[in-house]
Image 1 (cartoon, rainbow, N blue to C red):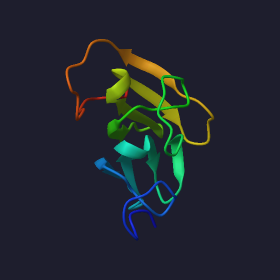
Image 2 (tube, helix red, strand yellow):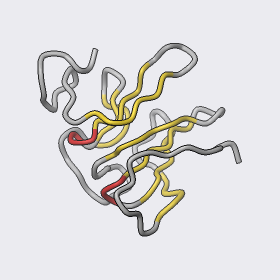
Image 3 (cartoon, rainbow, N blue to C red):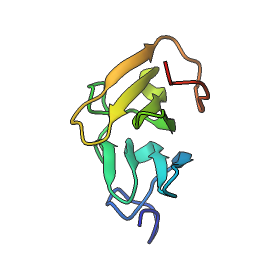
Image 4 (spheres, rainbow, N blue to C red):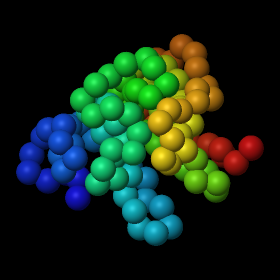
Amino acid sequence: MAGRAGVGSTSEKLNGPWGMYVDNNAILYVADRLNHRSPSGVTIAGQSGVSGPWSYQFNNPTSLTFDQYGYMYVLDAGNSRVQKWSIGMAYCVTVVSGSMSNPSAMHGDFSN
């Protein structure tokens, strides 16, 4: 379980958690902003403690959501983009990119 035993970058710790999402199976996903990852007990997207611009990295993720097909969308605030991630994939695809002024949340229909 993530979020135990104080701040840190190991799998059981969070550092600056922001956005959360609970799926239909009651699994909690967290945008772990200062660890630059999206863990669900384990890191499922990003690199723990490593920020960056590459398709497998985040820089201050602040929000996340899922579509009906199981794709995860992460608002990567530090890189001014939204990344589409398929669980189990090694990298993601940029679906929105541009100038964003301090983005912290997203809401929308990602079914199209």
